[in-house]
Image (cartoon, rainbow, N blue to C red; front, side, top):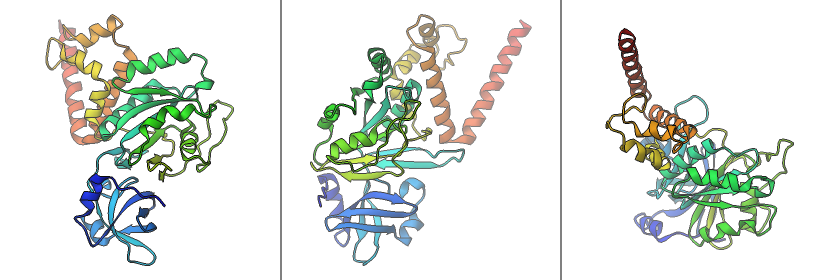
Length: 344
């Protein structure tokens, strides 16, 4: 059973000689599975850990390196989560304002989108914002190229919104179609695959594993794949790399991803910096570079609307009370301007 500990975490683990370093490979309803040099163990966090935890993100997540007492015959006890290199988090699905950690300590996150009916540029912008915020390096993975009739056009559209991001195109129908991603998957590195249900994540991982480890299913009548992965899991590949498979996400809400939004929309941030007024709202001020770019076709209006939506959503998630207060103040100011213009 291979278990690789990168030097970064091996050095941190040496501070806890009485405990064993392990990595979280599975999490279900408060129970964990960890892999150590001695094998796999079921595990729980200690009572002290629970008492000291301040938020959901303090608890172990898939990909975390942890320090555990493995002397117990049935269940190991996790006492410490080692500092993270990256953290992919989102707002939990639904209306509750709660953070959900998807994966930790990922080097490269593959944002998977199929080139058939799943193709959605606005959703990809959302994934890019969360990925940049996580600290991992995003790579766009366009899957099911064999089902796409206008491949060149869609690739150009993706290039237009994926600033500074590598874009790969694969087809599960070709046995070697996954080879484009193998340079990212080397000994000691961890990658994660995220995307909607049925985009082909499990098929790609099975190719990397060299066996049908994960369940896959065919296409439905609407040209989309069935949902097959039901939980997040970290898998160890034969070459010493590690891969995290995740269930398809119906929602990917913003959660404190301000810098990720700015990096994803770097073109808009650059335009806004050229506006005549520093506090330009991009609505009716003279010398607005953003509105000028939309008018002349330099900036797509759909991309501008997506940017505004994600900025507002992230602000609300970060602090709903202050966001709503700022929103109310903004609309009051707009109302005053409208009344003044009517009088004139």
